[in-house]
Image (cartoon, rainbow, N blue to C red; front, side):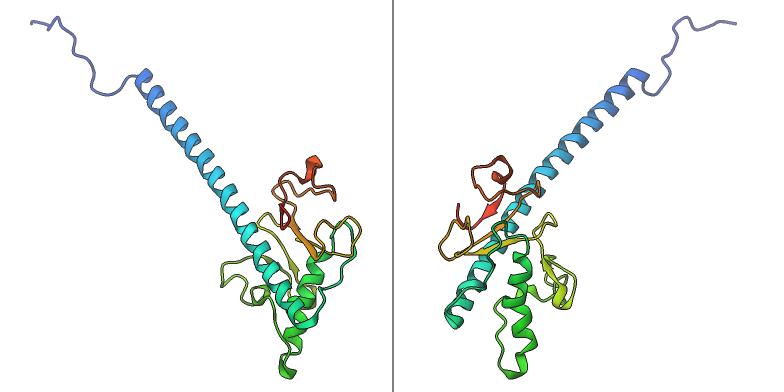
Length: 180
């Protein structure tokens, strides 16, 4: 019997080749997730800017009809989203039979998910307007202490959920506002 002196290499991949391929896959997955996170953050900022503009337009329309902006003297604007919801949507919706005007139809909690807005929490008179990060929008009228605009200030606390009445404060740097 004759044995073949040359050994045949077994078919398949070596352990080192498999480790390299798995490392490359993990690296590519990590880069993809980081890129998607960046894109999601940018989309949230653009969505918040659009929502601030929608609220601004609704406030201007409200002012055109009532010659005053909804009152909110809270310097931090913490309950501002409740004021906005009440004056721009809920009061008009409740008075629709007698000619009430809804200035912000996007604030309808019933159509919130259908329209893809997802910026309302709750229903009825207790609904709240939220930004893309789940924080309540802030609002104060021009007469409020620390108001920046003479008419009104509307802002989102941004991704960190923190804000400060001083726009130069570190907590306010990522805020989406109507005064920058």
